[in-house]
Length: 190
Ligand code: HEM
Ligand code: HEM
Image (cartoon, rainbow, N blue to C red; front, side, top):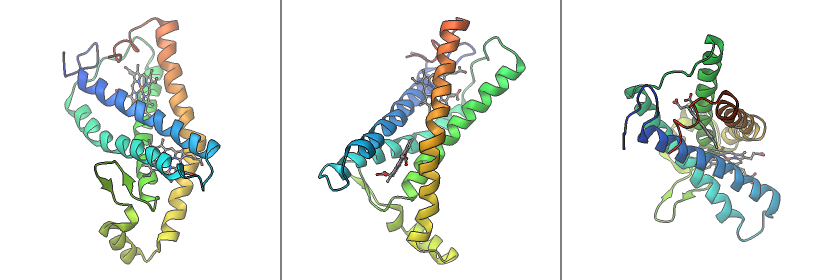
């Protein structure tokens, strides 16, 4: 098993980061819309199931930093045959995805007033951290005035933007595989 990328394919570590983040990201979506569409806020399993959304979301956020560090240290596979514009668009789309991998966990975490329970341990809510007290003392906001705009961003991007960007990304991977018949998809597969 090759850990590092080569000019022709992704290595095991890049694949590990990609597929665990992708599964957790898509899982976070499935869970939160299950909660929103099918569970009553008073249902006994409402919070435990929503907690799964938080766990998956925090996992995405925790993975993105080492992933970006590893990306800087590793070589990147060559662009597949295509025009300079196609390459620019593909790179922009990938950085857009990285932006979402940061924005969604951060806005989700700092805008939620309950701890994220991993079973063996829990991550305290941002509201209960010294970092929040410190920021609140400097900028003079309350939890309510801080949380509201952060929630707006999390909900807006989650509801209208992120799934579309991911759907385009998946469609592009399938287009390369089925239409272009190049190795863009297979070089990322486990
Ligand atoms: C991969 C990261 C994440 C994604 C893709 C994501 C996505 C979403 C989406 C799509 C919604 C529903 C938006 C709507 O239709 O209004 C949502 C709601 C929510 N998210 Fe996230 N989220 C992520 C991470 C987090 C994290 C880390 C937390 C907290 C620790 C969190 C807390 C919440 C809460 C409290 C809601 C409101 C649920 C409700 O309305 O009942 N999210 N998220
Ligand atoms: C079934 C779902 C998915 C498939 C088939 C897929 C496929 C791929 C493929 C083939 C590549 C390599 C592209 C290239 O070589 O230029 C890639 C890269 C990437 N994917 Fe996905 N992907 C999926 C889901 C996701 C999700 C949910 C995210 C994040 C929200 C994501 C984020 C990324 C990022 C950031 C890269 C760039 C990696 C880099 O070169 O640094 N992917 N994906």
